[in-house]
Structure formats: C-alpha cells, structure tokens
Image 1 (tube, one colour):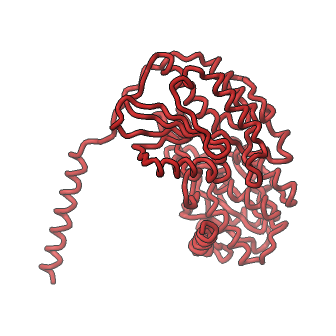
Image 2 (cartoon, one colour):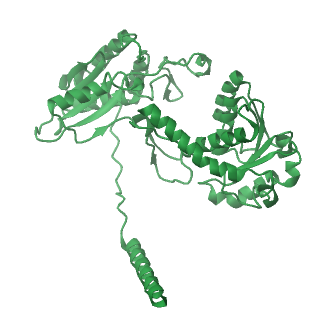
Image 3 (cartoon, helix red, strand yellow):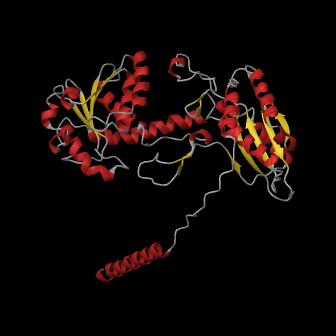
Length: 434
C-alpha cells in the first residue's frame, strides 16, 4: 500500500511539474492589434442624420404589423435620399412588409459573403415615464455631444453607422472582394420573425452561406470596468440568445441571491412581506441593489445604512422608488447603522470589498468598521430579528462571530435555498421557452 501511495505521489508531482512548465513556457495567444488610423468623417453631419432617423417613430407591435407602416416607409425614403452613393452600388429588396435587405456584390464570386445587421424598430415609451426623459423620446436632439432619443443607441445608431460607412466607401470608388449583405429588420424588438427570420429563410432558398454575421452589440469604452486598464468591449448576450440568459451575478445586481433572500424570509414569516422591515448595513453593492428591488416589488420596508460615498446607485434607487409608489414599499438610505437597524425584523450585511475591489480591502476596513454588525447593533433591531448574509462571510470584519453563529442567524437557510431558488428559476424559464 505504501509503495502504491508513493507511486501515486510521484505521478501527481510529475504532472504538476509538466503542467507548470507548460504554463510558463506557452506564450500568450492574445493578438496585439495596432489601432487603425481614423477615417475623416463629418461627425456633425452624421450626428444630424442620426437625429433625423430617430424622429421616425418606427415602433414594432405584435398585433398590427402595419400600425406604424408610414413611419417605416418614411425612414426608407430618408435612407435613400441621405445615402445616394450607397444606393448607387447596393441592390435593395424589401422583405415582408418593411425589412430591408441590401446586397453589395463582391468582385470575387467564389468568396464567401458576410452580413452586417441592425434593426429599424424601437420599443414604445412606457406610459407614465415621459417625464423621466431628459429630452423628448423621439426628438433626435443634439445636446452635450450626444444624439438623444429612442433608437439612437438601440439600434438606429448601428444602422446609420453602416450606411455612413458604405456611403464613404462608395464615394471613394471602393469595391468589396466579398459580397456584403446589409440586413435591417423591422421587428427585432418583438422576435424578428417577420423580418430577420424571413431573410434567413430567403438565404436558405438561394443557397447563401455566410462566412460571418456582425450584429448589434454594446460598446468599446475606457474606464468602465474596475481594475481594467485597457479598452473593454461589452457584449450584449441576452438580446441575441435563443435560450434564456440568467444574470447569476453582475456588478450592478445579484438577482438570484435577492430572490433567495426573500424566499427564505417567506419561509420564516409567511408569504406576505408587505411592511416587513429589513435593514441592510454596509456597502451599497449589487446584493444591496437586489434587496432594494425585491423590497420595492413586495411592498416591504428597507433601510440602508452605508458610509457616505458608498450608498446604493442613484438610478437603482430612482427605479425602485417609482415601483414603491405602486406597492407601498418604503426605501430609506441612512448613514447611521443604529438608525438604519432600529426596529428591523431582519438585519443583512455583505462583505466590505466585493469582487474587483480587493485592492481596497484595508481602506474599506477602516471606513466600514463602524458598520460592523455586532451584538450591540442587533439590540437596536426587533427582539429576535434574523441575521442574514449571502456568504462567504469574514467573521470579525462585517459581522461578529457571535452574531453570524448565533441562534437568530439564518445564513445557512439562505445558502440551502440558493439551490432551490436556482432550480425554480430554471424551471420557469425552460417552461416559458418551450
């Protein structure tokens, strides 16, 4: 037996050495791409054309495809008038009612074609939110270096950028080697079955096999992601997935945890959490945001105790308070942990330095130490108040061991319920997607 164990040990060590050496000796395959020299563009004129495109109220609807037909037709006429050189080299087809398919023939008929996609349609303005817009939603206004209005980002910005590029290239006499298809659907916001799906069917009938498709995404930006010094490309996954995409955790929110937390409370106190008082003490982070959204939906009361400068996101509070006006929820943000916890039926905390903020651990420990959940702090809550934490916890930092290991701690119930809540989320989404 000893010989066998020794042999196993030797094999494990050998494998570790081989893997370590391979890791050290294998060079990075990350390509170092040099930045392309910017092409001269009349930005003011392009922004003006985008602003005009935004003014067309191309809202797609499930019930009546023709409800805003005149707006789509007006946009089509605008595109033709605005990009004459592009329309001189492109072959245009209208698919279905209002989807546009442009084809730019390539010089090499054997080269595999590709497609650039965008969509013309936008979603309607939610009733009652008109006052929340800094500019009228279909104004296409140019203010502070931005084009304002519904569709300026999603997705007329991409559509107009593609047409601007083709116009410039056509004006310069450029001819692509590969055939390029421009696909501009008119119902992407409501499934794409009338537009993009019909174009896909047409391509199949014509035997067109694309090398790649470039569809809408988010942006390449600097300084948005904490700890990332280089430009970051943000990828919009859920909008283009044929299956449900679950936000397991993001910097903004932790929705699966929030659902688990309120499910656990319903187990403890019953299904109706209207008026239930939960206090959150610590960093106004993603977990805090999801607790706020949950309280707003359920009509609960939540008080946040956070140091100045570490409060919950202002936009999260604005959205939650708008929901609270309907449900009767109460949301307060305070800077005194004892005031926040006073009368609470549950006290919640989380780590002081979430993922991405580990380098701030020592500085945050100094700032947050008055917000540690102690036995003394718990006495300000209702007698028998629950203690909650999403785990893992740092005993001695955000919470005393006597509290998290005490009889009123329900952290392990929360941990168990993550499994059950996650299964329920999957079940609901799978059933809805069938």
